[in-house]
Image (cartoon, rainbow, N blue to C red; front, side, top):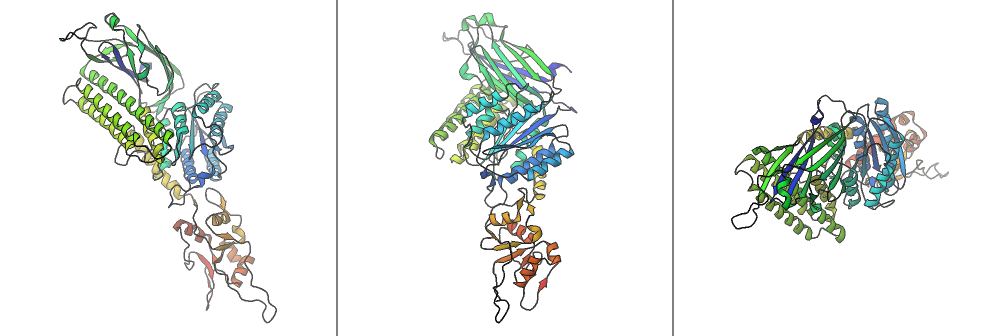
Length: 635
């Protein structure tokens, strides 16, 4: 296979008034069939601070940690045997719960067992979690692999380093000796301002920032970095661009996405990966010397060096040249005596200038898209700044900012329509692209509260990177702009698996269904662990409002005239294992003697599920209930 076929590149150009050249560098990976990917090492970095014990939705029993455990199980089952996985949990401290291990059957089984035992603790220190993840990768070297760190937190870091710029620098310093850069995928949920996590995703990752919607099956969305990895054959793309022939870059128009270094005559970008279903675009504007325009025609004004790692782990490199072309001379004068304002759109592919109607229309579309992106991303950045400065609900200023951006997008659309053939398919597409950007910005404009700031960050991030973000960010009736249909289908399949996985997992949220009730546990149930948190039944009952007694209450002793004074104990119950009941253990005898109802553990679970104290007369729930005329015993 030729090298040129692996990473496809094209340069869309438009010379304006012989003074500037708008350029959009477009890159996409060739779609491979029946290609084996090199192994991937995944590190899941999970927040287990105390707030992870809160319920995801008020009416449900599942906690955030319960849902993240489902995600961890989905990842474990999805990745192949040649891949490796480690799990790091962080709170005030950091813990390596699962060391890096191969995901064969034994490894998968071990991970699932450990995940069930993860519990919450302490506050939130993201820094130590990320640095430990890098340490895991560094101490387990592998010559030919790809590494991905996926971090989830539900709130603001309140311990460790919390300054985004410093934390980014610490992360980069920790991996300076790595052979390859390790990308970070960042997820959050909740109403807090996730500015730190958003900045980590922008500076250390390749994907959009993921904000999760509580009302969605977000476990599937959390698998998005893994699903994108499945469709990725090109990684570690470094692009060095130099301007020649006395030209310079307009630094105000340089794309900041993936930018590593910049100057008036050079730009350096680094992109962690390009999935097969995604095209990456780098817009820029070149300033020309109008007096030397004619002599620069046909000469190379941009030299682009590209290096990357292919699907086999081999290093590849190319050098591209972008030449200056115009159908107008630099000294042409209009009828009014003023220089003519003319535009020349064209494409450059493999050093050749392409000027067919299709190529010209494509160049216009790509350049217009680049300007839409620049305007939209800046507007959403300004909105985020307003919110962080005000600290209250979204100020009305944010609506004015977005409205101004929409006006600018419409102006750009109209200006480029003059270069297109009326009623052409490309003209229609130009209108549709502008409408998509306006619709995306409108989604942010309609948000009202500061609690929506995470959603605004996610919209800004997906528009800036051209990568998909989690579902539930955009309104249901609006199609997410960067969601490829193949990825959408995969997410639907994962969502089905997520629902099945949840059914196999017993989770217990926090409610008050047992308030005012006292329970005694039979001998076999006292040490019984249940749920993914591996809580004792006693802990579950206490957390849900009940009280625990470790012995059946006895009737007061009175030698005259009877041995015992008969006394009732309302709202007291023995939760009993059926084996203990069959053996008629000491606690069972005592409960029958003082006429305390004996219930199965199923009663506890069903009461939690239904969120109410159920009727104990149900034969599925009781083993013994005292009645005036007869005693009912159900085995």
